[in-house]
Each structure stands twice: as C-alpha cells, then as structure tokens.
Length: 167
Image 1 (cartoon, rainbow, N blue to C red):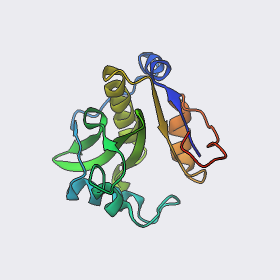
Image 2: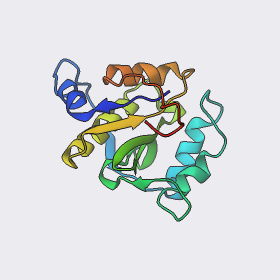
Image 3: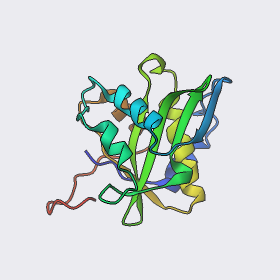
Image 4: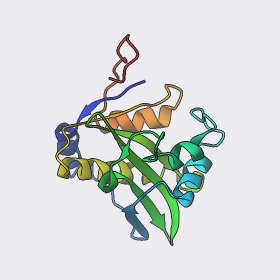
C-alpha cells in the first residue's frame, strides 16, 4: 500500500503542541547510513514481523551502491540511540526527486514508546528543510501499528498506477 503525503501539511500537524510527544531525555537522534550496525538493527526489527521479506540486511547495505536502490537522503536518514545502542532507524531514499521513507523500524524492546514517532517527525522536518514538497512510503496492510502511525501523521492511502510504476 502506497502512502504519499504533502510535507507542508504533515509539518503543520507536527507543530500543533497538542500533538507533541515528549522525547525521552536519554535518547539521541543521529544521522544514519547503511552501515552494518544499521542494517542489523533493521533486519532484527523486521525479523518475524508481518512485513518481513528476508533480505532486509542486504537491502539496507545496497542503498546508494551501484546496482542498489535509490539515493540516501542523508539529512533525513536517522537513527535513535539510547546509551549508544540503536533503538530505531528511519532511512529515506530519493527516487526521481521524490523522497521515500524506505525503512522505519523500532527495536522490539522499545516498541510503543514513541521511537518511530520521533524518527518520522525528525525525518519529515529534515525533508522540509531540504525543500522537498512530498514524501511517499509503502507499508504492508497487515502492519496495523505502522498504518495507525502513518495515519496519525496524515499519510493517506493511494493505489499504485496500473502500469506498475511507483506513484
């Protein structure tokens, strides 16, 4: 399922103080790149989940490499650390001048604590600062927690074009 969104509209929603969620004082947001540690964190987070495809580690490692997928949007690709350990990852790639949230995941032990919210909000702010006007993501319909998160952020479902191109 594809979820395109207008970044300006999403950011306006984020700036509503009623919607703001406090960030744990022990968390640190840092830039992420497709390193072994990030790839392992993504693979571990998806392992056994409804949207696991089995090649998460290799897919993350291929970002930006010849024959790989997309260009990493460096300022919008983030990890959330707690005591130096990765507790969440948001990797954003650019395809045809449109950013895509390609990987958003949370360590099992940190789920339902706002990790994905912090990462997604931070990535969207970075995309706005980079003057992108829209963002897309894809999510498995069976991943209800992710669907609820994206809906809260204002993403809306759309169907991909019938010709199979990304849309």
